[in-house]
Image (cartoon, rainbow, N blue to C red):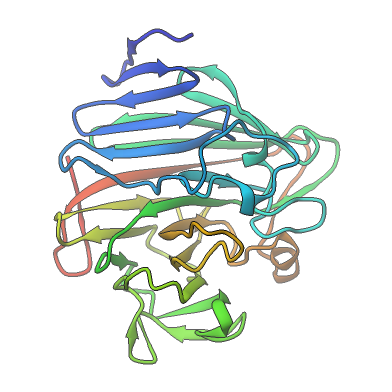
Length: 316
């Protein structure tokens, strides 16, 4: 059991059973090491708003034989070495299917690809931001191919705004329910497609579930903003490592086989513009790590308080 403590950065760290809670005057963040290392809460103290999607099913301890459609369906998982099933890797990758080990109260470690890859993530609060520091290392004896995608399922409401850099004028379809937006690989105008503004979230009508990808970005950010609260969440990242953003926009149309459905938007900084590792390999966007090679990056989840035009300003 980890007792309550204050970090050198000035935020509190404490335990609630197997959960780890990080909090300061702006945020309360909850990590679940035993549930695939996932984040289950990103709570704004300013507006008393939970920004991560609650689970469709109760959170449970991760297990290697789990299927993603029967998983909890909420929170923020990590996807590596794939998102879609690919080769020997299951749906949404391997990391969510096993408990993560704690190196210290804010640093978790996991493995993938039969132990050939080690994955470390360190979580810190910095004012109104959560910083996630990642390191993936190939500790095996041969080259490892992989992709990474963040998978934060956000709690949304009608009329929430999805914001992307101004450079994004079109977006590519990875999947669209009943091919509503087109077939995989089709390019559509962003944000307006067939007189629909995709950047303004509609109601949970049960008819729409779309996965989309930007092209290569020069500006490393994406955001969701709630006009009714004058608050939102902005993700910032280094486009030299994560050049793309995937968008999962689900209006209560998934999982198809379950009674409880997701009403969510996932903003997914990603290393490749494809869900399946096999597709990324074919398109030349997969990471290839030599033995001993590592890849590091940082994701910043920042609360934002204003929406001046299309560029929200970070909070304190």
